[in-house]
Length: 222
Image (cartoon, rainbow, N blue to C red; front, side):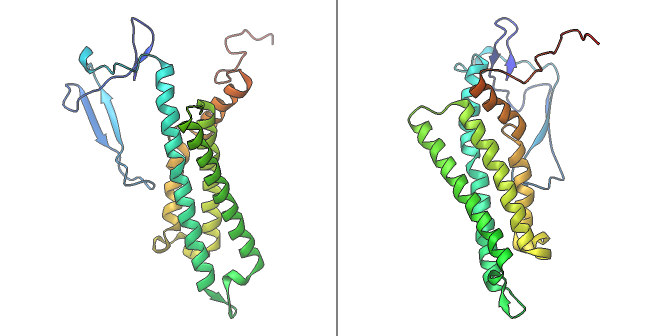
């Protein structure tokens, strides 16, 4: 994506990997979503011919359509992670015994497990609702942003509770909860941070954009 200096609009471009001036270096030492290969991309006087310009991406509004759809699909990642962690914790509490009884028999642990299940059910329902709106062509960017922000935040909370339920085992890779804990951090951040997605939704429901303070650029009376 880049701003067209003639039209002042955001356009989309394809940059070939062998383009002169383009370098991409793999980012090492990630602790989350290690299967996703990220890189530092540097462009120095890279020439992109007009034939490599995406024909249907001619404004920031067009870009927003792409972001809305991608945010919808990303909402199902934290849902899946949370379901997996809930399943792991459910089995762990029923199988592991302490003081002669399964951990699942203790009140506070049941409460935490139910809290996780409630979060998972709510996340699934919101994700399903967004998909139905999208199928009807009625999903708005604000709704997609709300879904991504809220679901990823609830997933973060859910996995943190799961880590608590496993005690010391919760930080061991053997039980995969710690891995899920780490994987949720980039999911919480990418496709728009929680804060930015909240502002996108806030703009939609109030009609007021707060990305820049209203007083920005005004001279202080102090």
